[in-house]
Length: 96
Image (cartoon, rainbow, N blue to C red; front, side, top):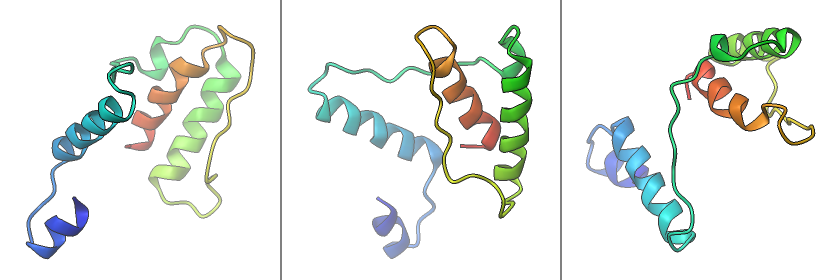
């Protein structure tokens, strides 16, 4: 998709990439997975103030292309500790 857009000197829109991702996920999973979106923000999470401050700091570094920003974030913990909730929130905060 990227090569085609570049070769044809055409802009590549975000929604085109997202639609291609959804199609690839559905195809690879043979329809057993689906793509969900969320409108949650860091302010919707109650408690976990230390974790929220950490994610706010990391998101700022990633947005600003700070060389000290991490290349990855690994969230570990027992079920029910908001790992899956934080993943799309952090991605949105970083501008992804």
